[in-house]
Length: 510
Image (cartoon, rainbow, N blue to C red; front, side, top):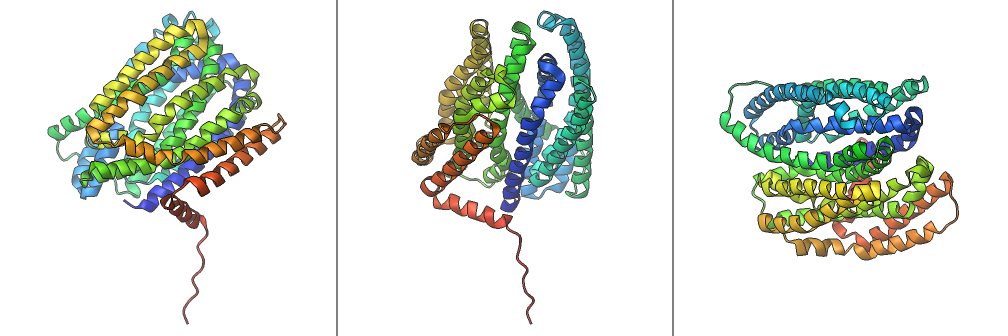
């Protein structure tokens, strides 16, 4: 597995993120204005509801990446092709189940959201629901090919397709929304682009990666092993998906579409935070699998986790501090003062999510070792506790009450209980991890102080906001680079800078 592929994947992932965030900043206000706050809330609500069907993937997408990475390391192409064929048969069955389950849910939309939505909002919701149901059904097959490409670490290709898809989406929707089309058209465009993306994945996997699909035998023993692994991932996916969707669903039933819209903006900000952390973590799963297959001990895995965690802290610390200092001004400029509570939602959840984001390599290690069962149970408990606390607080405190309930659950489960689990199951040296990361704190504290002084500079427009962000980012980068980063991290950055420079022509020898 080439390290250069991972580095290129990380770089292109941040390029994808840059395009995505710029598109969100520039396009989301236009989308909200075109649809109106109410219809935007309905669109977000149906997206959250139909996305719940994604849990019917049963974790097979993650299993494809894990087992194909193993077969690739062991150079077992025949077993790989048989495994892929079995997974596609299973995905056909899953797609049928999801379509039937989604069809049944459709007939209960009136009972679930009749009190929170108006008659017109409910009509729009039903149309969007049907469109997105078709989208999610096709997505199961697309996910199989995406997972295969990830196992081969071709992240640059995946990121390139994502960028093209984002640009096409923005271009098409900008044109159609300006002509007066509404949320149903948005759902239709998303579905068409999803199908087109899947077609490209299939062509690439078959032609460039020599993906073979041949069912030579139905390996029941392998299926049982994969099913056990996938079921654990599946339960974890249920917990994670519902944890982030439960707020939208509860607010839609209790508080109405406008509260959903405010909460949806906050969750969108959270998704960007998760994306940044996932750029590195998502690219390392094949590498972690290889380390486990080759017999790496707990010390090696702890050191690996600490190295990744330090890089994550550098990146996420900058985002978190920048959002705390300048986030309120950004939201006011971006979509208006009526979404001021979205900053609180983002700030609270980003703060409590930081710890689990830094330790995500431990999750990958557990999965690679097929030891993720207990942690998955904790995630399920987290979802239930967060939902219960949120429901108890939402009547009195609205969207902030829902957010606080989720945050308290994260602190209790992911800060305390899960760390004990990592130590007992992985031999994970938490003290070593904390000591390595704590070396960054003085430089980050100095950067925050500089950012606070920059925040005091007068000015409320986009120009002043951008100037403050640039000054803070430059101050943060300089202080963390010269005071916080170690020699290994500086070497990595230097290698990345070298890779970005155009190659010099080599003169011919006489």
